Image (cartoon, rainbow, N blue to C red; front, top):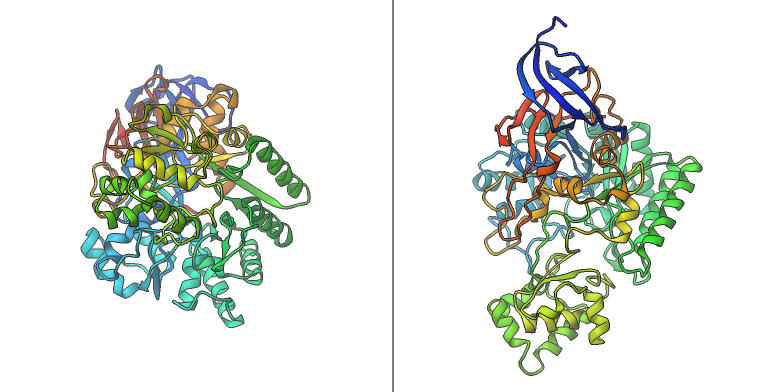
Length: 588
């Protein structure tokens, strides 16, 4: 072989992203593409000994909010450090573009927005948006982050990203952000016919400029005020452009500001399945995760849901889906139970003072009565608990730390049964015992029976629902607010390391992070190891994989990822980040 290659990975175990068994072979890279796979040893400027290592396509995080953080944390270290080479942003109806008139605050921008507007009681909240004119935000954004918010359109945003970023970015345009440009702060209503036409015009424009589709966020303002006519028109618009409609289906029983106690998460999924059947749009169901957390047999319910989805497919609907790596918990998980009572904690003077107050007189009863009546002072879904809008919330959570050792490892639901009281009473009783009591979704990196069902599916992609940041960076939130979830920096390593073998082979796990998401997005040259495919690669030592989960020090680089290539260049080499900005915008 005469051609001089740029890089040769020699004698590695190649996992091609399709689910096929790994093979021992050499892989060479030239000009940003895979140029050779086989048993020969081509000449190369750099040779990497991959003996004992696995070589795979770079991981694709199909459900990310990285489009908000990449303009500030360009190196995307928390993504590169776990082998992610492409993130898919703009999910859940939220995106930083287009923003010609107004900007809808994502939690990440709290410090910038706080220079202009007071924060709501309870702090950051992805479900309630702070809206302000984009031109007003620009100076505060620059002063806070040292970067310019210098875009209005999706095309201008893409130009900003293409100046250099650590990972590739594919992005939806958020329906909520688009709706805001048309209706401004008067969005809490049905759009007029003229407004609907303008919303559709902006949807078309952003897709023509490179957005991979439109996303809906039907638990969030301003998108959840859209009526059926608006949603159907958007779906048809996306279908006409042969793009993707990614949906955060309605999970909570509040829509357009109105409470429907009878609503169940499954209802929100069924609404979207009907939309797909009616319009012919490629519907992507985001984060099938904890849909049936309140049900006794969540696994059986999940099986029934998947059968239902298959029935819609057989009727002609184009439906794909993803689930979350089940121990990430999204972007901003906070382990202390006291977080759910933040306004009361602040009023009392801290966690210790709040705990002491819960032991005196009828204060605990007063707090419980407030919360059960829906009068929790916080509007934030992160700092409140509301039995009316989220019945069953918290029952599956497990106590991970408490001075009362007997409760450690028990679920909140089990304690409800044992103590014969509801979730609110259990949480307050625990806080009276220990102000610093902690919980998590599961312990020992186990996964729920429901998640086991989703992860066993041959066509299920997995994502993280996180935002890439840089290690040891300035926290994006004010001191004392919420730390970045520690598992967001190493969850894919944990997925490979911990997932039970009976849920699929290593090759299938890799496919769920590579070939399957690439197939959903229609990419022929990404997510696979084959000649002429993009040289986005990850090389890892399976035996040394360690997510390094630590809630006290959440921004830690995982171990076991040896090399990461983006566009054929090292973003991580021999375990060390290079700081290279080789990523770009990719479309469908």
